[in-house]
Length: 599
Image 1 (spheres, rainbow, N blue to C red):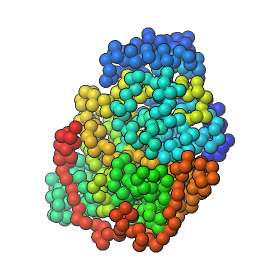
Image 2 (spheres, rainbow, N blue to C red):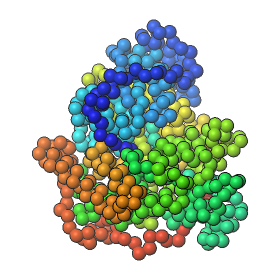
Image 3 (tube, rainbow, N blue to C red):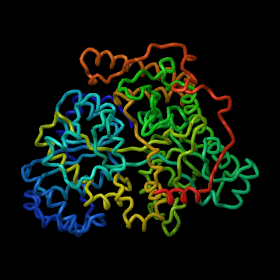
Image 4 (cartoon, rainbow, N blue to C red):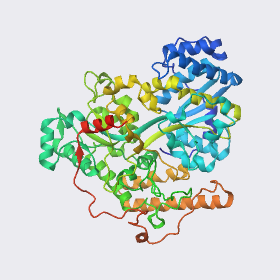
């Protein structure tokens, strides 16, 4: 996730401009309702039309779907004719909501929804502006659960647990089934309350060209050079060997120059979230624990078990942002990008790097988001060179390789959980209408179809639906992963981060200085840790004076010599004598068997 400061006038103007741009037609087969019916809410007949023509498949029967829609129709009656505004980032799942589900909700309930799509950083900016000004820019947001530590501390967001049992009870779907949400632990604060409701999820996994890995001549050549079998890398050593092997030994397949690694390094805000998205913990720079390490999380921030007060990011305060494992993580990112990625990758941003795999010239990627599955299974005729003529993927996804500092019991990667967030600054009637829409787009009536479009699963019942059993062979391991218990090892940013927007913006410039050669990884992480502590010190002062963070703001440890913390059982890890042990791989087929066996 990225963050750039947003001029206040720009943020406030966003709501004014809502809906002024060119509208695209909804991607739906449902017959268009008459203008009068859409304005008044078509009720049960409109619901039946959408159920028959658009909301299939579903985990519910058509009768059950109709019953759920009838509840929405009745609950929405007090708000008929109201026009609400909601905001989310631009990904296929939200495009489907904006173009199709918002139209369906309007026709069924009579509540008009303007569902605007902006870049991820702009969504965070709007969220922060509403929190700072208490002006109602939007009536509901889908923003990442990475802000769970922020929302639960600032308490400008609505505590959904209490809302559903109290003021919002009359507009809370009895069929919501909170326990069915895969990522509900990600949106639960240190107080045990639910602060956000997941709308879409995707993990960053390992991606590789299975067709290349299976070539006998390539397998033999790799075994002869490295002494172990070519397969899915279990550790970073194997990943590095494979990257070097394809870039420097194989070099060419079917007359095309190929490379062993893909990443990005453009000096821009999304370079920050490249690292805060669990890269340090993938290397091993955190404590054990799920969904996030305690006392040290994947940002390197220390917060002891049972406490809500972060104690620092620097090693001198017991944190790990500039510890040996974190420096190792940044050094490997920089080394692999320079040595083994295609020319120009260092100048790519997030949005350029991942789709570049469709060119078909990269053997593997250690940091690949499953949100790109839909584009990576696009037909060959559309320019996707990673599927065969029948549309079968030539690639697979697999668990992320572990860095040298990683230990059993730690999280293994990042999982984005874009989640509905309501704010106290939104008038109650508009908040209730937005809550109805939020529940509608995650309801069991529509979720299976929405997941077929966006492939960003949020419900356990959805991913186990028969339609995904049928489609699984075409999705490169996505369904198998989300049906496995392994899925809990990929988690979003957690509660140790006290104010995501204020801290996230510090990362990209420091990392950019590594890529440019201005700083060594150690110097960059030293400066980052120091800046994080300075910002958290200001948060501490504000919290102590005015309970700005509800008493759960930072309480920084006094700095001491690094040796007082390094290598201690609950402290940052000491530097390893050997950061590149022997590579370890495993056959992809064994991974699939393990996923299938564990229910």
